[in-house]
Image (cartoon, rainbow, N blue to C red; front, side, top):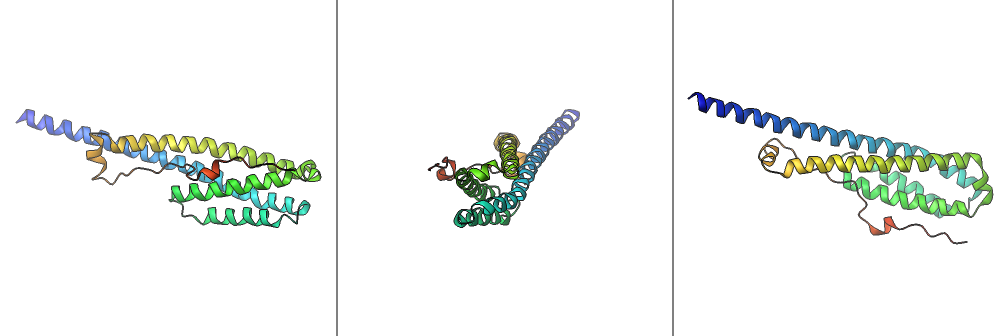
Length: 183
């Protein structure tokens, strides 16, 4: 009887250990997603200033400016928990920003404008932060996904509602293309 009780206690402790590991991994993944969200918000806040600055110099480039504005609005409209949808919308926004930067190359006065240069540098730093945050999130999502799918964790994960996290990745190959600069 004592042996049976010891086995039951060991199994219960093991279940608790697995459950707590899953909770920890889920929290790390959610914290990592929050980091991406902060950087995406920062980028979204920079865009109106960048668009207005470019508009002052290149007002006839309305199509590009409208694309950036619409892509920003679409990215902000994606629900907070929709990682795949947010990744797709942010990919479109990144492409539109790339086209905006290409347009800016055609205007020497704009490139010399200190306000524009500062905005561009802030945007570049933010893009780098987004990349680092995305890598961190994807690593946290990978760790959680491994825990959710591996045995014996999967015996605990399923009944307690732990699910895999989607990766934040570019799914459209066109979004990976480098914008072409033509003069």
